[in-house]
Image (cartoon, rainbow, N blue to C red; front, side, top):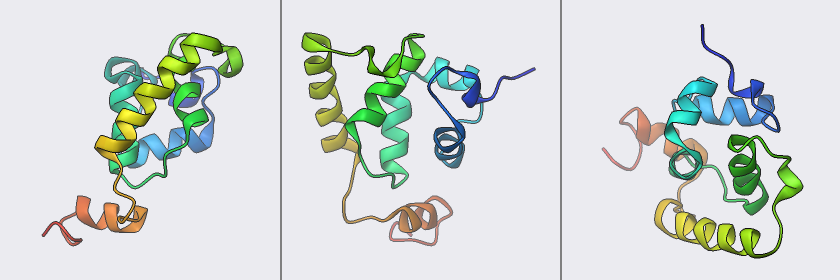
Length: 109
């Protein structure tokens, strides 16, 4: 039996829905994928980058409160977030266009 993403502390129904849109439909799948790869999928799927959303995901997968990230650890996560954003987010592609691309009728025909 699979657990929903929202069974992971700090990840609620909205995060669960966003992840489901990009094919991550269980807590097990998310844990296997890891925070960076899952967040990259969200960005490629058209979600707008948000640093707190990223580090909340990292903390959730570590079983820690979302606001437990501080100091040097938070600075290091910011660098990883910035790299993910640069590599995986295209600000010119909306979430709708990303979904159309996924089914083969958007910009990437």
